[in-house]
Amino acid sequence: MMVLADRKVSGVNVVRRTLHRFKHRLILAMLERQTPEKLQALGRKRLPGVFARAARHSVAYGALLHEAGVAAGQVRTGEDVLAQAPILAKADLFERFPVQQLLVDNLPPAALAGVLTSSGHGGSNFAFGLSTRRQHHLTPDDIDLGLQQAFGIDQRNTLLVNCLPMGVVFTSNTVCVANVSVREDMALAILAQAGPLFDQAILCTDPLFCKRLLDYAAEQGFDWSQLRMNVILGEEMFSEDYRSYLAAALRIPLDESDGTLIGSSMGVGELGLNLFFENSATIALRRAWHRRNPDAVLPSWFCFNPLRSYVEIVEPGPDGVGDLVITMLDREAPVPMIRYRTGDRARWLTEEDREPLQDAEREALAAVPFPMLAMLGRARDQVDSHWHVDQFKALLYRRPALADQLSGAFRVLPIADGLRLDVQLAQCASRPPEAVGADLAELIAESAARRAVPAPELCCFAYAEFPHGMGLDYERKFRYFPGPG
Image (cartoon, rainbow, N blue to C red):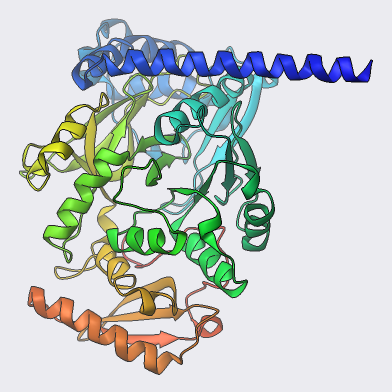
């Protein structure tokens, strides 16, 4: 009887997996027939519905509309929403209203299934996203669709090791998920022992902790070539020098079309995960620009799904760069998020962006059905008129042998006659801070000379002696520059 029961369960699982795969193929085939313009038009048609629901059922949003002098009954089209609905930020919602007034009034607490907080990195309070049980039920399919598009999980048995901090977890109907947070020993043990059971592994993490995992793996003598590795990086922007360093360490053929990927994903805690994402075409675009000018501060070119979120770039300057504003289009969201200013700067993809691409790369980019934008991160990462945080992130990984000696953490500090760069060595560093500092100072000076700007003063610290809190706590986003905001 037990054997029959096991066979029955196995048969049910096979049917479920077949149905999931069929659904993925159907949706992706439909997407391939779309264009970015068509998808954005469909998303715009959803704006009046989410606006009307928020106006009727959210006490907080009703109060904000009243203060802005907006008569909800006069807002009937997507264009009306974009013209009249106020643009809001965290301070207008989470730092002002209690949760009872943010929630839609017809939602019982028993319907809530999850809470995801923001990092608390940019304000006096946490923002948070709430989700219902129905949303939780649908989330695995949404995750799997993205994973199939990027990594072909329906064709390859897949292990996903999630090392994101702050309680961010994944569920899936297709891949095997290990939610380990920032435990490098646990993550490596799972990859080493369970990884060979699968056709491929996906590591989901942030750049700083990923560097710690690489260092720990090197200490343990782990051979990454035994696994077919892919990486999803979130939490912060990273450089192409970092991507190249990571690819070499993990034995990932980055610039070859064999299906492996090191890609970036961007979410907002109060809005959702994976709102913006890279694919092979947008990665090729960024790497082409990096080859043209390795010292330039590059945006991340991201795709997004306009049926999930409506995206605006508001108050753009002459260069097209403005504030990123997002409206979530889910009409079951517990907390309606209408025209929410995230604090990021972005612009739309331009024809000039495509200049360094080869013909085949241009064709691949043109075939992407999703709209694309260039994400520039936060204005506070511009240190001064000469240096941006991302330029230091790039230089630390430009020479792999030097990067091996570093943890990836640094702090830029204004001093009387310029800047000081404090850099932390890796826990496994084999060279003293003075020797590493001399090589890094030379590399930074070369970059500064090419751009005819002053080089910062440099101080290197052993891992445990770094004075800026890293060693420490990978649960929190690291502040590289303590600038305004």
